[in-house]
Length: 366
Image (tube, rainbow, N blue to C red; front, side, top):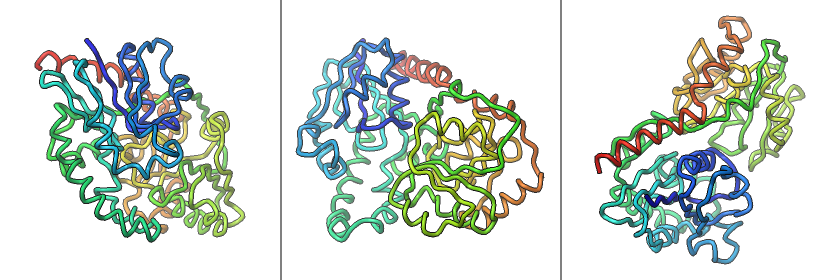
């Protein structure tokens, strides 16, 4: 059986790339197709048993593609449709940017693992547009209109959808009118150890971009006066640095060993954004840290209120302040060992087994 894995872009290692690597371990002879990638990084990330080829679309040959790949978004549907996948029996697309729109043989099976329908053309379109420059605001509405039509039509090329959370499954139903099986993405839980002894600081970890709402954490802890460490880089870094009081430390981007140490020592993780799934809360729980999270989106699949963390249900400073105060008052009791055990339900081997079982069943009925 010839297998192809189609991914959007691979220039850093995040959740989507962890999914591709885990799938490549199931199908080590698969070929991987990507619009644009850092091939050295990809080869270092893929499992040792991987024997397939890494192939790119024509996007990778365009000027400055590795740095400015987002500018070529309007060409990516065309690039996907130029891929000749006629020799492949099974196609697994990894969708968040354009990846699922490939053309396959009529008798081939196409399974799409959807991290999210493209946020910037669907439910986060207006938020994305408001944060762009004048030229993009002029041009993107027409591009997004065309991309929506193509995205909806290309969903019909997929035989089966897998969603990474119940939240994403509901968005697939809303935008594509398709049912999706929920299989949570893999998390390297075994990377983390835990201790019942916790530090006195809270941690906010992630990209410093608008929708992650690190500003909410900073404003809330300005009001609380409790120690908060913010780790991450992005467009909001300087703004957050200007508004943060002395009890808040902005560390910028950090290496994994430092992040791991902070997760294993922090009093709790603050997670104020709306995420499709959210790997960071699972990593925090694997490190024995309870999570204070906005109770919407993927957090509802990972954080159990009162058992592995505290959920607040309004994305506001006051709601987050109240949640932290409840936490500080001892209204909830958390055991690091139980948190770690809960995180193990998201282990890579469980993800791989569920994906393989799902695809095997689909192959048997194709």
